[in-house]
Length: 588
Image 1 (cartoon, rainbow, N blue to C red):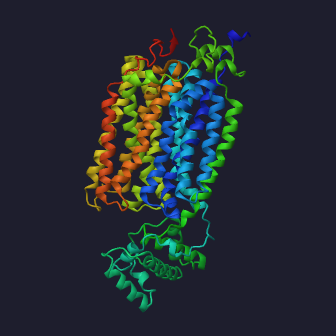
Image 2 (tube, rainbow, N blue to C red):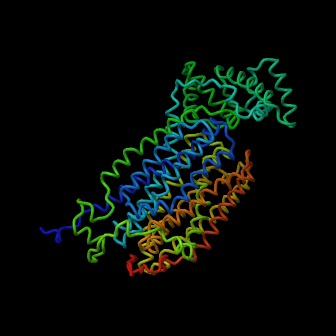
Image 3 (cartoon, one colour):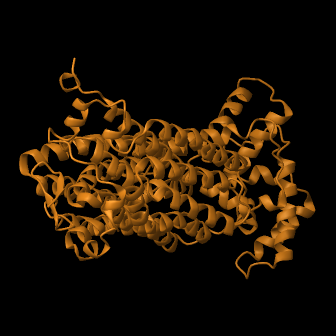
């Protein structure tokens, strides 16, 4: 059988699969810090504002390197640069686990951003070169869903691994440095009918007098460093004594505290009549103390964040090698692809000489700056990421601070919005192709983005409304809020394939640079987001601060809605690129 009459090979599916695996790892490494963030802050003694800058640092380098890294992929080919990108961000992810200062955290996070910056622009160019025009939206949704699966698994996998890296034999004794907020701990310990009343029973008479004296001065100026160290030392002694109590849990006063699954299992065994070994009893009591003092005492599971990040980083090395071995920049260069598949990818058009990287030239920055169409899309991506990042990065903290959800359950709840968003990504890719076929590219790309931004606004407004309800109200529960955040994630992801397809339509020969430009502005929004959240929340956030954060996110989606109404996929960025009816572009 001649090559012309053969059935098309399916190498293009392998290429999309490789890009999807890359996307999975990218999001896994990017958002694992959302669950680990609080533990990193505690371990290194950082403020909430410093942690906001740590989160933001990634997106600044990621955003500003978008266009240069997209141009590098156009210039030198995806096989070379994407393999290097994977290796770079993986090394810096592992180095976060070795960080011992705020400065090192910032440097390693900037390095992660630089490494990941070119991944999606390059993947977009890969889809444009390897997939026929009629299937690009769906292929883009597959690559995007790889990231969403990684992002969905990141919270639960991170929580599980952090627990795994803190085995039962880990010492549970508290050091004075483990008392993070001595003033807050004194306040909780001194509550007459609070959950700490059982703990006060292990205090000596002198310690009780000292505690009473400290309680009277809580509303005055903060103690000096020596005074705080004295408080930390005494509190650590008291709490470590409580670790050895055989029945520390008080059914009447502690029933509302949130305990991790491991603690509830130990308590169930105790209720069934099994006598816990001394290490088991101490570990159970450590979890009880963390429940009584949720923000004042360092978490035991926090010791797992360093090996966790090192493991994630090392996982990128074999992925980088696999990409180098199996990927090729163009169908004509892959010896596994036959001529029938190459013709299918070209939509039956005659073979054209492959455009070499050297002939691409510099990124068309001037034309991108003058393109109102591209600015509309950029502003839309900017606002979307401000509203969307809350779900990926700050939701674990919200569930802990407002609803006191334990680590593993928190990881599971944080996973839900991103996991269900995967369906939105697949649906959005199919819907965008179908609408484009029926109504043309202009409205086929515009409608999915427009509709999904409106639902994002509505979900955040509902979050504000439900926050006003009493804590005992059946609608004011963490699962109801997770449902609303799921709607935001589903909406955002359903519009993502249309955004990619828009950039592929208007990008022409410079699709990597154009995708990079839009991603740059989207991730400037992601860089600004944690700083805005930090300003709204402060160091000790109250409910009204969380409501202000919801208002910021909803307003950002409103800005995206207005911008989405103005984008037009039929207007190329570079005017000497002719946009054809099938959505491809050609040099005139």
